[in-house]
Picture (spheres, rainbow over the protein chains, first blue to last red):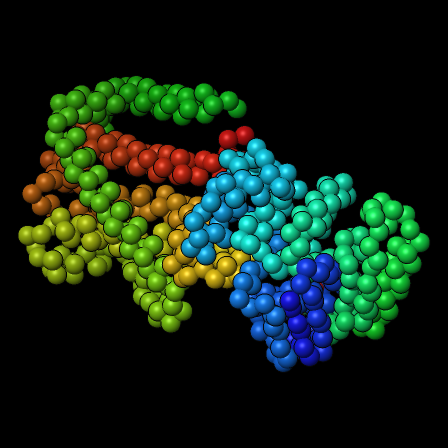
Amino acid sequence: MLNFSNVHMKFDKDVLSDINLKIDSGEFVSILGPSGCGKSTLLRLASNLAKPTKGLVDYTSHKDLSIGFVFQNPTLMPWRTVLENVTLPLELNKKKSSREEALMWLARVGLKDKEKSYPNELSGGQMMRVSIARSLINGCNLLLLDEPFAALDEITRRKLEDDLLEIWEKEKFTVLFVTHSVSEAIYLSQRVLVLSSGPGKLVYEKNISQYNSKEEFIGSKEFQTINSEIFEKLKSGVNNE
Amino acid sequence: MNKLSTYFSPIIALSIIFIIWELLVNLFSIQLYILPAPTDIFLSLNDNLRELLLATLNTLKITLFAFLIATLIAIGLAIIFSLSKILEISLYPITVIFQVTPVVAIAPLIIIWVGLDNAEMAILILSVIVAFFPVLANTNLGFRSVDKNLKELFLINRASKWQTLMKLNLPYATPYILTGMKTSIGLALIGTVVAEFVAGTGSSAGLSWIIIESGNRLDIAKLFSALILLVLSGIFLFLLMSTIEYSILRRWHQSVKENES
Ligand SMILES: Nc1ncnc2c1ncn2[C@@H]1O[C@H](COP(=O)(O)OP(=O)(O)O)[C@@H](O)[C@H]1O
Ligand SMILES: [Mg+2]
Protein backbone atom coordinates (compact mmCIF):
# COMPACT_ATOMS: atom_id res chain seq x y z
CA MET A 1 0.00 0.00 0.00
CA LEU A 2 2.57 2.56 1.15
CA ASN A 3 6.34 2.39 0.69
CA PHE A 4 9.10 4.58 2.05
CA SER A 5 12.45 3.80 0.43
CA ASN A 6 15.60 5.47 1.79
CA VAL A 7 13.64 8.54 2.75
CA HIS A 8 15.54 11.50 4.13
CA MET A 9 13.91 14.71 5.22
CA LYS A 10 15.86 17.82 6.02
CA PHE A 11 14.65 21.23 7.15
CA ASP A 12 17.23 23.32 8.99
CA LYS A 13 18.60 20.08 10.35
CA ASP A 14 18.05 16.45 9.44
CA VAL A 15 14.66 15.42 10.72
CA LEU A 16 14.21 11.96 9.21
CA SER A 17 17.02 9.77 8.06
CA ASP A 18 17.11 6.57 6.10
CA ILE A 19 13.50 5.57 6.57
CA ASN A 20 12.58 2.29 4.92
CA LEU A 21 9.06 1.26 5.55
CA LYS A 22 6.57 -0.95 3.81
CA ILE A 23 2.96 -0.97 4.90
CA ASP A 24 0.62 -3.56 3.49
CA SER A 25 -2.94 -3.04 2.47
CA GLY A 26 -5.26 -3.30 5.44
CA GLU A 27 -2.51 -3.15 8.03
CA PHE A 28 -2.80 -1.20 11.29
CA VAL A 29 0.62 0.25 12.08
CA SER A 30 1.51 2.55 14.95
CA ILE A 31 4.49 4.85 15.16
CA LEU A 32 5.89 5.85 18.52
CA GLY A 33 8.53 8.38 19.29
CA PRO A 34 9.50 11.28 21.52
CA SER A 35 8.04 14.62 20.53
CA GLY A 36 9.96 16.47 17.86
CA CYS A 37 11.41 13.27 16.39
CA GLY A 38 9.61 13.72 13.07
CA LYS A 39 6.38 11.73 13.46
CA SER A 40 4.18 14.45 11.98
CA THR A 41 6.72 14.97 9.22
CA LEU A 42 6.50 11.27 8.42
CA LEU A 43 2.71 11.53 8.10
CA ARG A 44 3.01 14.62 5.93
CA LEU A 45 5.29 12.63 3.63
CA ALA A 46 2.85 9.72 3.64
CA SER A 47 0.01 12.04 2.63
CA ASN A 48 2.03 13.79 -0.07
CA LEU A 49 1.74 17.12 1.72
CA ALA A 50 5.53 17.24 1.67
CA LYS A 51 8.16 15.77 -0.64
CA PRO A 52 11.19 14.01 0.83
CA THR A 53 14.59 15.64 0.44
CA LYS A 54 15.93 12.28 -0.72
CA GLY A 55 14.32 8.92 -1.37
CA LEU A 56 10.89 7.94 -2.48
CA VAL A 57 7.41 7.70 -1.02
CA ASP A 58 5.01 5.79 -3.22
CA TYR A 59 1.77 3.88 -3.17
CA THR A 60 1.08 0.47 -4.67
CA SER A 61 -2.56 1.12 -5.51
CA HIS A 62 -2.41 4.48 -7.24
CA LYS A 63 -5.74 4.38 -8.94
CA ASP A 64 -8.28 4.53 -6.18
CA LEU A 65 -6.01 5.99 -3.51
CA SER A 66 -8.04 8.04 -1.08
CA ILE A 67 -6.26 9.43 1.95
CA GLY A 68 -8.00 10.35 5.18
CA PHE A 69 -6.14 12.50 7.68
CA VAL A 70 -7.00 12.97 11.33
CA PHE A 71 -5.10 15.76 13.06
CA GLN A 72 -4.35 16.10 16.73
CA ASN A 73 -6.94 18.88 16.90
CA PRO A 74 -10.35 17.98 15.51
CA THR A 75 -9.86 20.74 12.90
CA LEU A 76 -13.56 21.22 12.25
CA MET A 77 -15.06 24.21 10.49
CA PRO A 78 -17.00 26.15 13.14
CA TRP A 79 -19.33 27.70 10.55
CA ARG A 80 -20.58 24.33 9.35
CA THR A 81 -22.86 21.93 11.13
CA VAL A 82 -21.57 18.50 12.07
CA LEU A 83 -23.24 17.04 8.97
CA GLU A 84 -21.74 19.70 6.69
CA ASN A 85 -18.31 19.10 8.19
CA VAL A 86 -18.54 15.43 7.37
CA THR A 87 -19.67 15.97 3.76
CA LEU A 88 -16.78 18.38 3.01
CA PRO A 89 -14.47 15.81 1.32
CA LEU A 90 -17.30 14.76 -1.01
CA GLU A 91 -17.90 18.39 -1.99
CA LEU A 92 -14.21 19.03 -2.62
CA ASN A 93 -13.98 15.94 -4.80
CA LYS A 94 -17.02 17.11 -6.75
CA LYS A 95 -18.97 14.07 -5.75
CA LYS A 96 -22.62 14.34 -4.98
CA SER A 97 -22.77 15.47 -1.40
CA SER A 98 -24.70 12.61 0.07
CA ARG A 99 -26.61 13.29 3.23
CA GLU A 100 -27.39 9.62 3.71
CA GLU A 101 -23.74 8.65 3.57
CA ALA A 102 -22.77 11.33 6.05
CA LEU A 103 -25.55 10.26 8.40
CA MET A 104 -24.38 6.66 8.10
CA TRP A 105 -20.82 7.62 9.07
CA LEU A 106 -22.05 9.78 11.91
CA ALA A 107 -24.02 6.84 13.23
CA ARG A 108 -20.98 4.61 12.95
CA VAL A 109 -18.86 6.95 15.06
CA GLY A 110 -21.71 7.16 17.57
CA LEU A 111 -23.08 10.62 16.77
CA LYS A 112 -26.50 9.70 15.49
CA ASP A 113 -28.46 12.76 16.63
CA LYS A 114 -25.78 15.44 16.41
CA GLU A 115 -25.96 16.20 12.69
CA LYS A 116 -27.49 19.65 13.15
CA SER A 117 -25.17 20.70 15.98
CA TYR A 118 -22.31 23.10 15.49
CA PRO A 119 -18.79 22.07 16.53
CA ASN A 120 -18.72 24.44 19.50
CA GLU A 121 -21.68 22.57 20.96
CA LEU A 122 -19.73 19.30 21.11
CA SER A 123 -17.29 17.83 23.62
CA GLY A 124 -13.67 17.15 22.67
CA GLY A 125 -14.36 13.46 22.16
CA GLN A 126 -17.41 14.16 20.00
CA MET A 127 -15.45 16.59 17.84
CA MET A 128 -12.79 13.95 17.30
CA ARG A 129 -15.53 11.52 16.25
CA VAL A 130 -16.73 14.02 13.64
CA SER A 131 -13.17 14.37 12.45
CA ILE A 132 -12.89 10.60 12.04
CA ALA A 133 -16.21 10.39 10.18
CA ARG A 134 -14.99 13.13 7.84
CA SER A 135 -11.72 11.31 7.16
CA LEU A 136 -13.55 8.10 6.21
CA ILE A 137 -16.46 9.33 4.12
CA ASN A 138 -14.62 9.58 0.82
CA GLY A 139 -13.91 5.86 0.49
CA CYS A 140 -10.72 6.18 2.49
CA ASN A 141 -8.22 3.36 2.02
CA LEU A 142 -5.25 4.99 3.75
CA LEU A 143 -6.01 6.57 7.11
CA LEU A 144 -3.30 8.69 8.72
CA LEU A 145 -3.78 9.79 12.30
CA ASP A 146 -1.49 12.23 14.12
CA GLU A 147 -1.83 11.77 17.89
CA PRO A 148 -5.60 12.02 17.51
CA PHE A 149 -6.54 11.10 21.08
CA ALA A 150 -3.71 12.84 22.92
CA ALA A 151 -5.93 15.58 24.29
CA LEU A 152 -8.72 13.29 25.55
CA ASP A 153 -9.28 11.86 29.00
CA GLU A 154 -8.50 8.19 29.58
CA ILE A 155 -12.07 6.85 29.39
CA THR A 156 -13.11 8.85 26.32
CA ARG A 157 -9.87 7.84 24.73
CA ARG A 158 -10.41 4.13 25.30
CA LYS A 159 -13.94 4.35 23.84
CA LEU A 160 -12.67 6.10 20.73
CA GLU A 161 -9.89 3.56 20.33
CA ASP A 162 -12.36 0.70 20.49
CA ASP A 163 -14.74 2.38 18.05
CA LEU A 164 -11.90 3.05 15.63
CA LEU A 165 -10.81 -0.60 15.86
CA GLU A 166 -14.35 -1.78 15.23
CA ILE A 167 -14.67 0.33 12.09
CA TRP A 168 -11.23 -0.71 10.88
CA GLU A 169 -12.04 -4.40 11.38
CA LYS A 170 -15.06 -3.99 9.09
CA GLU A 171 -13.58 -1.69 6.46
CA LYS A 172 -9.98 -2.91 6.42
CA PHE A 173 -8.44 0.34 5.28
CA THR A 174 -4.73 0.82 5.94
CA VAL A 175 -3.91 2.73 9.12
CA LEU A 176 -0.79 4.63 10.09
CA PHE A 177 -1.32 5.79 13.66
CA VAL A 178 1.09 8.20 15.32
CA THR A 179 1.05 8.42 19.08
CA HIS A 180 3.36 9.02 22.00
CA SER A 181 1.45 6.61 24.23
CA VAL A 182 3.18 3.24 24.31
CA SER A 183 0.19 1.29 25.60
CA GLU A 184 -2.11 2.89 23.02
CA ALA A 185 0.21 1.82 20.22
CA ILE A 186 0.44 -1.75 21.46
CA TYR A 187 -3.26 -1.96 22.19
CA LEU A 188 -4.38 -0.78 18.78
CA SER A 189 -2.00 -2.06 16.20
CA GLN A 190 -0.70 -5.13 14.44
CA ARG A 191 2.77 -3.64 14.18
CA VAL A 192 4.55 -1.04 16.28
CA LEU A 193 7.46 1.06 15.07
CA VAL A 194 9.64 3.26 17.21
CA LEU A 195 11.27 6.37 15.83
CA SER A 196 14.35 7.72 17.59
CA SER A 197 15.08 11.40 17.60
CA GLY A 198 17.76 13.63 16.12
CA PRO A 199 17.52 12.60 13.27
CA GLY A 200 14.52 10.30 13.34
CA LYS A 201 15.38 6.72 12.47
CA LEU A 202 13.33 3.58 12.78
CA VAL A 203 15.01 1.77 15.64
CA TYR A 204 12.48 -0.87 16.63
CA GLU A 205 9.79 -2.89 15.00
CA LYS A 206 7.47 -5.44 16.56
CA ASN A 207 4.59 -7.48 15.26
CA ILE A 208 1.84 -7.85 17.79
CA SER A 209 0.07 -11.20 18.01
CA GLN A 210 -3.65 -10.91 17.78
CA TYR A 211 -5.65 -12.19 20.71
CA ASN A 212 -9.29 -13.13 20.74
CA SER A 213 -10.15 -10.20 22.89
CA LYS A 214 -8.32 -7.01 23.71
CA GLU A 215 -9.04 -7.57 27.40
CA GLU A 216 -7.17 -10.83 27.27
CA PHE A 217 -4.30 -9.12 25.46
CA ILE A 218 -3.92 -6.32 27.97
CA GLY A 219 -3.67 -8.88 30.77
CA SER A 220 -1.12 -11.00 28.90
CA LYS A 221 2.57 -11.40 29.61
CA GLU A 222 3.31 -10.42 26.02
CA PHE A 223 1.72 -7.01 26.46
CA GLN A 224 3.93 -6.33 29.46
CA THR A 225 7.08 -7.54 27.70
CA ILE A 226 6.55 -5.42 24.61
CA ASN A 227 5.65 -2.48 26.80
CA SER A 228 8.93 -2.58 28.72
CA GLU A 229 10.97 -3.31 25.58
CA ILE A 230 9.60 -0.21 23.90
CA PHE A 231 10.16 1.90 26.98
CA GLU A 232 13.80 0.84 26.97
CA LYS A 233 14.08 1.74 23.28
CA LEU A 234 12.50 5.13 23.80
CA LYS A 235 14.78 5.87 26.74
CA SER A 236 17.95 4.95 24.86
CA GLY A 237 16.73 6.89 21.84
CA VAL A 238 16.42 9.99 23.95
CA ASN A 239 19.80 9.40 25.63
CA ASN A 240 21.54 9.35 22.28
CA GLU A 241 20.65 12.98 21.67
CA MET B 1 -25.33 44.83 35.89
CA ASN B 2 -28.50 43.75 34.14
CA LYS B 3 -29.44 44.46 30.54
CA LEU B 4 -32.04 47.10 31.36
CA SER B 5 -29.62 49.28 33.29
CA THR B 6 -27.03 49.15 30.50
CA TYR B 7 -29.65 50.62 28.17
CA PHE B 8 -31.20 53.10 30.57
CA SER B 9 -28.18 54.45 32.43
CA PRO B 10 -26.83 56.45 29.47
CA ILE B 11 -30.32 57.77 28.72
CA ILE B 12 -30.74 58.93 32.30
CA ALA B 13 -27.27 60.49 32.29
CA LEU B 14 -28.04 62.35 29.07
CA SER B 15 -31.37 63.57 30.46
CA ILE B 16 -29.65 64.95 33.53
CA ILE B 17 -27.09 66.75 31.35
CA PHE B 18 -29.91 68.25 29.26
CA ILE B 19 -31.75 69.45 32.36
CA ILE B 20 -28.64 71.09 33.81
CA TRP B 21 -27.89 72.61 30.40
CA GLU B 22 -31.42 74.02 30.18
CA LEU B 23 -31.20 75.46 33.70
CA LEU B 24 -27.79 77.05 33.12
CA VAL B 25 -28.82 78.67 29.84
CA ASN B 26 -31.88 80.14 31.55
CA LEU B 27 -30.05 81.13 34.70
CA PHE B 28 -27.32 83.08 32.89
CA SER B 29 -29.62 84.19 30.04
CA ILE B 30 -27.16 82.95 27.42
CA GLN B 31 -27.88 84.28 23.93
CA LEU B 32 -29.53 81.93 21.48
CA TYR B 33 -26.74 82.42 18.90
CA ILE B 34 -24.10 81.34 21.41
CA LEU B 35 -25.66 78.38 23.16
CA PRO B 36 -29.31 77.47 22.67
CA ALA B 37 -31.09 75.54 25.39
CA PRO B 38 -32.12 71.94 24.64
CA THR B 39 -35.72 73.07 24.26
CA ASP B 40 -34.68 75.59 21.58
CA ILE B 41 -32.83 72.83 19.77
CA PHE B 42 -35.81 70.50 19.83
CA LEU B 43 -38.10 73.30 18.65
CA SER B 44 -35.72 74.01 15.78
CA LEU B 45 -35.53 70.32 15.01
CA ASN B 46 -39.30 70.25 14.85
CA ASP B 47 -39.55 73.37 12.68
CA ASN B 48 -36.97 72.20 10.16
CA LEU B 49 -37.80 68.52 10.36
CA ARG B 50 -38.44 67.96 6.65
CA GLU B 51 -35.28 69.69 5.49
CA LEU B 52 -33.18 68.02 8.17
CA LEU B 53 -34.49 64.54 7.52
CA LEU B 54 -33.95 64.95 3.81
CA ALA B 55 -30.35 66.03 4.45
CA THR B 56 -29.84 63.08 6.80
CA LEU B 57 -31.18 60.76 4.16
CA ASN B 58 -28.82 62.20 1.56
CA THR B 59 -25.82 61.81 3.83
CA LEU B 60 -26.84 58.29 4.81
CA LYS B 61 -27.42 57.32 1.20
CA ILE B 62 -23.91 58.32 0.12
CA THR B 63 -22.43 56.81 3.30
CA LEU B 64 -24.02 53.42 2.76
CA PHE B 65 -23.21 53.41 -0.92
CA ALA B 66 -19.58 54.33 -0.23
CA PHE B 67 -19.42 51.72 2.52
CA LEU B 68 -20.65 48.98 0.17
CA ILE B 69 -18.21 49.93 -2.57
CA ALA B 70 -15.37 50.19 -0.06
CA THR B 71 -16.20 46.76 1.34
CA LEU B 72 -16.30 45.15 -2.10
CA ILE B 73 -13.03 46.79 -3.20
CA ALA B 74 -11.33 45.83 0.07
CA ILE B 75 -12.40 42.19 -0.01
CA GLY B 76 -11.53 41.99 -3.69
CA LEU B 77 -8.06 43.39 -3.05
CA ALA B 78 -7.55 41.04 -0.12
CA ILE B 79 -8.49 38.08 -2.32
CA ILE B 80 -6.05 39.22 -5.02
CA PHE B 81 -3.34 39.65 -2.38
CA SER B 82 -4.00 36.17 -1.05
CA LEU B 83 -3.58 34.69 -4.52
CA SER B 84 -0.47 36.60 -5.54
CA LYS B 85 2.39 37.47 -3.22
CA ILE B 86 3.92 39.75 -5.87
CA LEU B 87 0.76 41.82 -6.21
CA GLU B 88 0.46 41.99 -2.45
CA ILE B 89 3.93 43.40 -1.81
CA SER B 90 3.57 45.80 -4.75
CA LEU B 91 0.09 47.12 -4.03
CA TYR B 92 -0.27 46.97 -0.25
CA PRO B 93 2.04 49.97 0.36
CA ILE B 94 -0.05 51.99 -2.07
CA THR B 95 -3.20 51.24 -0.10
CA VAL B 96 -1.37 52.38 3.03
CA ILE B 97 -0.58 55.69 1.29
CA PHE B 98 -4.31 56.18 0.73
CA GLN B 99 -4.94 55.33 4.34
CA VAL B 100 -2.46 57.76 5.89
CA THR B 101 -3.24 60.74 3.64
CA PRO B 102 -5.89 63.03 5.19
CA VAL B 103 -8.98 63.06 3.02
CA VAL B 104 -9.17 66.87 2.92
CA ALA B 105 -5.73 66.92 1.34
CA ILE B 106 -6.72 64.83 -1.66
CA ALA B 107 -10.23 66.24 -1.92
CA PRO B 108 -9.36 69.15 -4.26
CA LEU B 109 -7.65 66.76 -6.66
CA ILE B 110 -10.60 64.37 -6.75
CA ILE B 111 -13.04 67.26 -7.18
CA ILE B 112 -11.10 68.58 -10.15
CA TRP B 113 -10.84 65.12 -11.69
CA VAL B 114 -14.53 64.27 -11.49
CA GLY B 115 -15.58 67.82 -12.41
CA LEU B 116 -16.71 70.64 -10.17
CA ASP B 117 -20.34 70.06 -11.07
CA ASN B 118 -20.12 66.46 -9.96
CA ALA B 119 -19.93 66.96 -6.20
CA GLU B 120 -21.79 63.81 -5.25
CA MET B 121 -19.39 61.62 -7.19
CA ALA B 122 -16.45 63.34 -5.54
CA ILE B 123 -17.96 62.83 -2.09
CA LEU B 124 -18.59 59.18 -2.85
CA ILE B 125 -15.02 58.58 -4.00
CA LEU B 126 -13.52 60.40 -1.02
CA SER B 127 -15.71 58.47 1.38
CA VAL B 128 -14.67 55.16 -0.22
CA ILE B 129 -11.01 56.13 0.18
CA VAL B 130 -11.54 56.87 3.86
CA ALA B 131 -13.52 53.71 4.52
CA PHE B 132 -11.90 50.83 2.67
CA PHE B 133 -8.71 50.24 4.63
CA PRO B 134 -10.01 48.57 7.81
CA VAL B 135 -11.87 45.95 5.76
CA LEU B 136 -8.77 45.31 3.66
CA ALA B 137 -6.48 44.99 6.68
CA ASN B 138 -8.88 42.75 8.58
CA THR B 139 -9.70 40.50 5.63
CA ASN B 140 -5.99 40.15 5.02
CA LEU B 141 -5.46 39.21 8.64
CA GLY B 142 -8.33 36.72 8.45
CA PHE B 143 -6.86 35.01 5.38
CA ARG B 144 -3.47 34.76 7.10
CA SER B 145 -5.01 33.29 10.22
CA VAL B 146 -6.65 30.33 8.45
CA ASP B 147 -5.94 27.18 10.42
CA LYS B 148 -2.89 25.38 9.03
CA ASN B 149 -4.44 21.94 9.41
CA LEU B 150 -7.62 23.01 7.62
CA LYS B 151 -5.47 24.19 4.73
CA GLU B 152 -3.77 20.79 4.70
CA LEU B 153 -7.14 19.08 4.77
CA PHE B 154 -8.08 21.00 1.62
CA LEU B 155 -4.75 20.10 -0.01
CA ILE B 156 -5.20 16.41 0.78
CA ASN B 157 -8.63 16.55 -0.83
CA ARG B 158 -7.12 18.29 -3.88
CA ALA B 159 -9.35 21.33 -3.52
CA SER B 160 -9.08 23.93 -6.26
CA LYS B 161 -8.05 27.52 -5.49
CA TRP B 162 -11.64 28.57 -6.00
CA GLN B 163 -12.93 25.92 -3.57
CA THR B 164 -10.33 26.91 -1.01
CA LEU B 165 -11.33 30.55 -1.34
CA MET B 166 -15.08 29.98 -1.16
CA LYS B 167 -15.26 27.11 1.31
CA LEU B 168 -12.31 27.91 3.56
CA ASN B 169 -10.67 31.34 3.35
CA LEU B 170 -13.77 33.53 3.07
CA PRO B 171 -15.80 31.76 5.76
CA TYR B 172 -12.78 31.61 8.04
CA ALA B 173 -12.15 35.33 7.56
CA THR B 174 -15.81 36.31 8.01
CA PRO B 175 -15.53 37.40 11.67
CA TYR B 176 -12.44 39.44 10.74
CA ILE B 177 -14.22 41.00 7.74
CA LEU B 178 -17.20 41.95 9.89
CA THR B 179 -14.93 43.57 12.47
CA GLY B 180 -13.36 45.62 9.69
CA MET B 181 -16.80 46.55 8.38
CA LYS B 182 -17.88 47.81 11.79
CA THR B 183 -14.97 50.24 11.79
CA SER B 184 -15.45 51.11 8.12
CA ILE B 185 -19.09 52.05 8.36
CA GLY B 186 -18.26 54.72 10.92
CA LEU B 187 -15.37 55.95 8.79
CA ALA B 188 -17.64 56.11 5.74
CA LEU B 189 -19.93 58.49 7.62
CA ILE B 190 -16.99 60.64 8.71
CA GLY B 191 -15.61 60.51 5.17
CA THR B 192 -18.92 61.57 3.68
CA VAL B 193 -19.38 64.46 6.09
CA VAL B 194 -15.82 65.74 5.66
CA ALA B 195 -16.06 65.39 1.89
CA GLU B 196 -19.35 67.29 1.90
CA PHE B 197 -17.61 70.14 3.71
CA VAL B 198 -14.83 70.25 1.14
CA ALA B 199 -16.71 69.40 -2.04
CA GLY B 200 -19.72 71.53 -1.28
CA THR B 201 -23.04 70.15 -2.32
CA GLY B 202 -24.53 68.87 -5.48
CA SER B 203 -28.19 68.80 -6.30
CA SER B 204 -29.04 67.36 -2.89
CA ALA B 205 -27.71 68.84 0.32
CA GLY B 206 -26.35 66.66 3.11
CA LEU B 207 -26.04 67.36 6.81
CA SER B 208 -22.70 69.15 6.35
CA TRP B 209 -24.37 71.70 4.14
CA ILE B 210 -26.96 72.44 6.84
CA ILE B 211 -24.19 72.78 9.41
CA ILE B 212 -22.23 75.22 7.23
CA GLU B 213 -25.28 77.20 6.28
CA SER B 214 -26.77 77.52 9.77
CA GLY B 215 -23.31 78.34 11.10
CA ASN B 216 -23.02 81.18 8.63
CA ARG B 217 -26.43 82.48 9.68
CA LEU B 218 -25.69 81.95 13.38
CA ASP B 219 -28.70 79.67 13.60
CA ILE B 220 -26.99 77.62 16.29
CA ALA B 221 -30.16 75.78 17.30
CA LYS B 222 -30.48 74.38 13.79
CA LEU B 223 -26.78 73.57 13.73
CA PHE B 224 -27.25 71.57 16.91
CA SER B 225 -30.24 69.72 15.42
CA ALA B 226 -28.10 68.73 12.45
CA LEU B 227 -25.40 67.54 14.86
CA ILE B 228 -27.94 65.46 16.76
CA LEU B 229 -29.10 63.82 13.55
CA LEU B 230 -25.49 63.17 12.61
CA VAL B 231 -24.86 61.43 15.92
CA LEU B 232 -28.07 59.42 15.57
CA SER B 233 -27.00 58.42 12.05
CA GLY B 234 -23.67 57.18 13.40
CA ILE B 235 -25.39 55.15 16.10
CA PHE B 236 -27.86 53.78 13.57
CA LEU B 237 -25.06 52.64 11.25
CA PHE B 238 -23.14 51.01 14.06
CA LEU B 239 -26.23 49.16 15.31
CA LEU B 240 -27.00 48.10 11.75
CA MET B 241 -23.56 46.51 11.37
CA SER B 242 -23.71 44.95 14.83
CA THR B 243 -27.06 43.37 13.98
CA ILE B 244 -25.73 42.03 10.70
CA GLU B 245 -22.64 40.68 12.47
CA TYR B 246 -24.70 39.04 15.17
CA SER B 247 -27.10 37.37 12.76
CA ILE B 248 -24.25 35.98 10.67
CA LEU B 249 -22.09 34.74 13.52
CA ARG B 250 -24.86 33.75 15.93
CA ARG B 251 -24.55 30.04 15.43
CA TRP B 252 -20.88 29.46 15.43
CA HIS B 253 -18.51 32.15 16.44
CA GLN B 254 -17.05 31.98 19.91
CA SER B 255 -17.01 35.73 20.59
CA VAL B 256 -20.75 35.94 20.04
CA LYS B 257 -21.35 33.04 22.39
CA GLU B 258 -19.18 34.66 25.03
CA ASN B 259 -20.99 37.98 24.76
CA GLU B 260 -24.30 36.24 25.27
CA SER B 261 -23.34 34.76 28.60
N1 LIG C 1 7.87 22.92 7.87
C1 LIG C 1 8.94 22.81 8.70
N2 LIG C 1 9.97 23.67 8.58
C2 LIG C 1 11.05 23.59 9.38
N3 LIG C 1 11.18 22.68 10.36
C3 LIG C 1 10.17 21.80 10.54
C4 LIG C 1 9.01 21.82 9.72
N4 LIG C 1 8.18 20.83 10.12
C5 LIG C 1 8.81 20.23 11.14
N5 LIG C 1 10.00 20.79 11.40
C6 LIG C 1 10.97 20.37 12.42
O1 LIG C 1 11.10 18.98 12.32
C7 LIG C 1 11.19 18.37 13.59
C8 LIG C 1 10.15 17.28 13.71
O2 LIG C 1 8.87 17.85 13.75
P1 LIG C 1 7.54 16.96 13.81
O3 LIG C 1 7.52 16.06 12.66
O4 LIG C 1 6.40 17.87 13.98
O5 LIG C 1 7.80 16.13 15.15
P2 LIG C 1 6.74 15.28 16.00
O6 LIG C 1 5.45 15.24 15.27
O7 LIG C 1 7.38 13.94 16.17
O8 LIG C 1 6.61 15.97 17.31
C9 LIG C 1 11.01 19.47 14.60
O9 LIG C 1 12.30 19.81 15.12
C10 LIG C 1 10.45 20.61 13.81
O10 LIG C 1 10.93 21.82 14.33
MG1 LIG D 1 3.57 15.96 15.83
